[in-house]
Image (cartoon, rainbow, N blue to C red):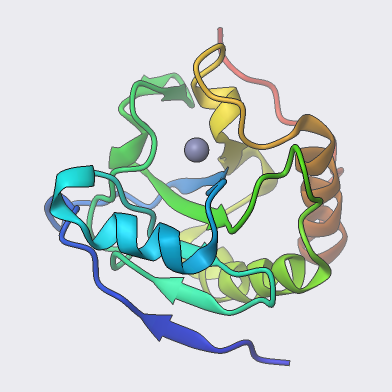
Length: 167
Ligand SMILES: [Zn+2]
């Protein structure tokens, strides 16, 4: 099935210089509308490229071509400033409280399918916030990250084992 996609542009964005080398996963903690409202408020200075509701609806907040402000101090693929090169995809909710829903998983696969080939994505170009900002961020719950990665490995191919991270 195709999930609904809505557009709610965020002013919290940088220039159209995004490198689109991979994807950084988050959970929003807050609900869908509250998260969108936060990201449409210029004072918050935060944004994801896309937020996925519990029912699978996707909200586009920042176009892929632009830098969104979701990572903060971070490091992945041997580089800092993950906002410059990782797209920000977030699940509505708190994965320490509720598992990622089946609709969220399926909607993620839809979103990734449009990008996987064109961007040359692979499992080792995916990370969660906890991994790129260790000790500072807790999203996603590690068991939910493992579940997500297994689902993506089953769909896109790959071992499903967690990628190794540069120290
Ligand atoms: Zn996060």
